[in-house]
Length: 131
Length: 146
View 1 (cartoon, rainbow over the protein chains, first blue to last red):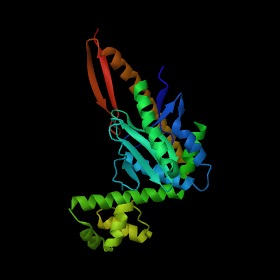
View 2 (tube, one colour; view 1 turned 180 degrees about the vertical axis):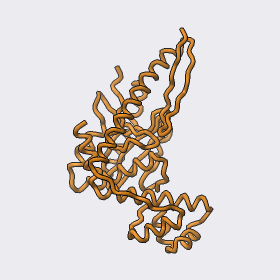
View 3 (cartoon, helix red, strand yellow; view 1 turned 45 degrees about the vertical axis):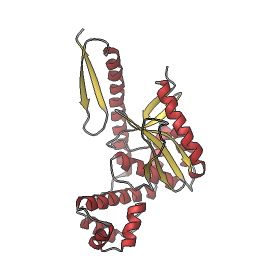
View 4 (cartoon, rainbow over the protein chains, first blue to last red; view 1 turned 90 degrees about the vertical axis):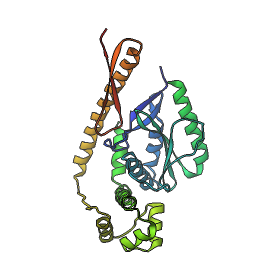
């Protein structure tokens, strides 16, 4: 039994052209824990709402400035495209999978960006090894 | 699901979500117009009656920050009618919930047939690829004749 699974993201409007999922480990969405914390923070919920809107528009194949949504340079560490959506100090990391769509791995804050990106890459590798 | 639904509702209750929607639609329309008409930033600025510095700022960070009147004016100049509507919150959330459930059913269907496809791969089978209209998801249906 694989420890990873996907759910359709309940944080994203379900009508996007590219379907957006969340990555679950042992049945728990990794992103959801972050989302639960952020929505309780009065200083951050506004930026979180903004980043969700950005993810939705990118999943509708709309043009976005690099300052809001960009593909991360991850070299040959993983073969899929890895993306970062950002608003203020909020960062959300996701990758693209053929025939599936976008898969949100986790969310984080700017001050933990480097560690979070390493964790995202490690998690994606683990997800594919686990398949 | 209760927490997730409540998270979604809280997101939709943030003005920043809707402001970003307007930013995104306008940015997409401006860049699309610029590309379709092979305009550089200077030509676009002239067309929109904005300074080149302001156009450069819009294109770099995607933040519009104009009055409603100016946003409508820009939209019309890039060939778009800025049509928007107010929707009842409860009805909107109910519509999203229904759509999510529908998508969830489609996804479960996809997973079941994807597994059938894998199992049938070694057998003599005909594979039919079905593409849904609104998504990039592909349903691979394996028809076994054995």
